[in-house]
Amino acid sequence: MPVLFKNEFYHHAVPRINEALVQRAADQLLVSTGMAEAELSILLVDDQQIAELNRTWRHKKGPTNVLAFPLTEGEDSAMAMNLLGDIVISVETAAREAKQEGLSLHSRLQVLLVHGFLHLIGYDHEKSDAEAVRMYNKERMLLQELTKKRRETMIKLAVNVDHVATLREARGTNEPDPVLAAGICELAGAEGIVVHLREDRRHIQDRDVILLRQTVKTKLNLEMGAAKEIIKLALNIKPDMVTLVPEKRKELTTEGGLNVAAQKQKLKKVIGQMNDAGIPVSLFIDPDSRQIKAAKDIGATFVEIHTGRYADATREEEREHEYELIAAAAEEAYESGLRVNAGHGLNYVNTARIAALETIEELSIGHAIMARAVIVGLDQAVREMLGLMI
Ligand code: PXP
Image (tube, rainbow, N blue to C red; front, side, top):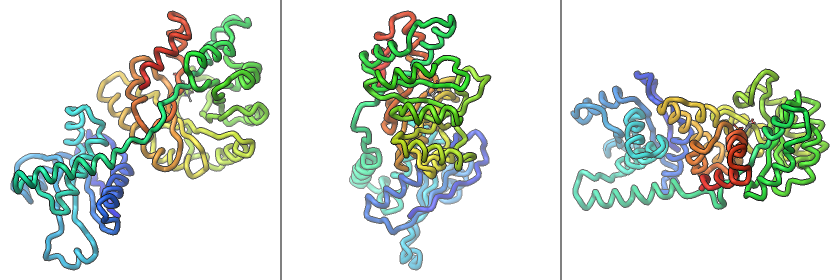
């Protein structure tokens, strides 16, 4: 199995990556080429480091994207131990190339990994035209295997109807009714209804959840903090699933993901209680490998990846970075066997890219749909959003 080394970058502007994804791609490469027992090492470096290696070993000036150092034939003991050699990738160059090609950084890293790997096992496009074609074909075939389509069904939209209740509560009357709104969303094509029953009952009320349980035909997802009183209610009402979120009284909306790693015991207990009642649990988390592992460890069925920082980013670079984190987290969670949803802050401009991630099953969207519904009507607002999610 490959060993992944990550050097300390000299350069602090190098984008963060999810090493587990690179590791997994390398594992898969070895399996697809029938070398599951072999070992290789991967060094992720910055431009300055790869330029030094390029100068020392190839007498070439400047950085490059990938270098491969196969173990030479003389190294019999290494060959006997199935050691293939080292692949060095500059994450900085990979990020530049990803941008030029309109790919995610992790997709570009995969291309470079495959390229370096083929050099390690003896392919060399610089030898002759025929060899270049042979290497190109093999590269394409391996990349196709690594990037096989995963989602067999279309991505689903779950509409959060909290803000219909916000409008009702603004006057303390009985309209507009989130129960009626939920029906309209379902008729327009939503495949789930989400409500957040907050401890302060600022929008959704107990009555709403009770009625929605009876009327929702698709799937009722109850978003909630892990507070005793709400847990008891959820166990009585039995929604189709619950999504656990951190909840603060003073926040305008959920501000970030749960710190699952820091409260594993407590959350594990809630998951156990819900599962015993036949209710699957989703944990709302930031796109962070540590939280994914913790969610998997304590038996969550789903994670919902927080897309808020991606949605709120004002600079393109920042948005790209947040997008990469979401793409990588969704991939990691999916690969670990978790089901993956995403949401928060998604709107008519930023949703399409997230919906295109094949590891994500469902998006949970509220505010943007309700804001548009005020102008164009709820049915149309839901249909327009669905039209973007292809
Ligand atoms: N997912 C979670 C966990 C949330 O807390 C919210 C907000 O209630 C959403 C999704 C929907 O976010 P938005 O209203 O910004 O679409």
